[in-house]
Image (cartoon, rainbow, N blue to C red; front, side, top):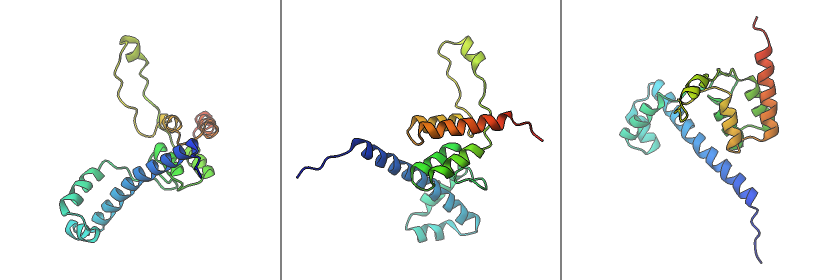
Length: 163
């Protein structure tokens, strides 16, 4: 008996596993930071986790660059929210709700630099821009219909005058 492998299903499983791996590392770093902020000495954290104290120290040094998750969201960035959806941690409706409600920052306008230089090396966009949703779509974390719904909601939010 031969087993037929569905390539699309295999890619979906691989995407989910990759997202789970990335998110597991973020969650680990945030949990270590929480333990240290709660006053646990690094040696005690290391002993409890069966790792070395220098490993805890190195991870805590990296933790300074890891953003906290805002209240009401499952991730610290639009991309992280899309990863949590791809990893199966939140459902599609919740992912769309969160990405539609995200307070996106404006992406910098690089048109002047591009007009001056044919091969301009542009700095990366600041975290929290809508481009992260585009990246999530490009990497297969969200589908086209979800992308369109989120885009429409974010455009509607931009058109709403602030009180």
